[in-house]
Image (cartoon, rainbow, N blue to C red):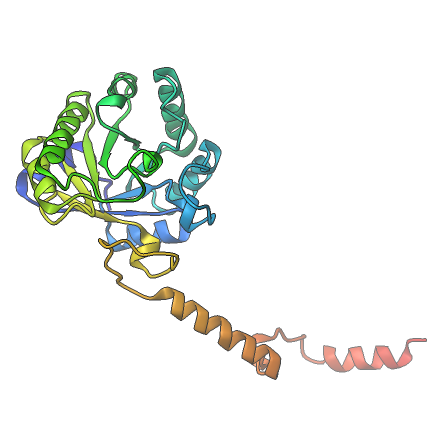
Length: 283
């Protein structure tokens, strides 16, 4: 499978072909996602919650993001991969943003990075793009600044707020981003922004009118049970499958059913008898 690039995604928008997008945090999931034919993978800072059990994304470090991005790249060598810039890896200065975006590319071989924020991160987007790297913008519900938003709440649910978000979207596009992620907004706002921008617009809880969809893999597989956002569709309930497998294993071990003969290695012919004879002769 040939890896898609920014021109492929632009053409998909023009043709009206939806872009498929999921998060991935490790080799096994990335490998399966590539086999399934996903267009993009995001190594999201959501790993803070679904992998490390943090209460949010803020504790996630660049070093953690690099390690997970390396693992995802090994699992999906032919998939377009985006590294999520963690909290304070780009907010402090343009220089920090360029340096940390460069780390993603040099150490983990990602194809692009993602930044949260609209007009306020335009200088950072321009700096990274001018340095020869690709940027996906991210506006709407932005988890890294959820405290300012009053928590994990839907955004742009008034006409005025939708128009203000549109201005953020246009600023991100003009700064040079190749695509934009919209999170947690009504479909009407998602439609307005998607139709107003030339670059592909992806949705995570922004309705069906965007150019593609992304979900957190742990949500759509039913692995993360702490909470489920309204916009998630569960395609499996792996938590229950895994729990039942663990219970069956416990039962088998305690009852002596595991390991059975088929799970055990065999000595060479005659060696078991020889071992018994040697033990008899031992002092």
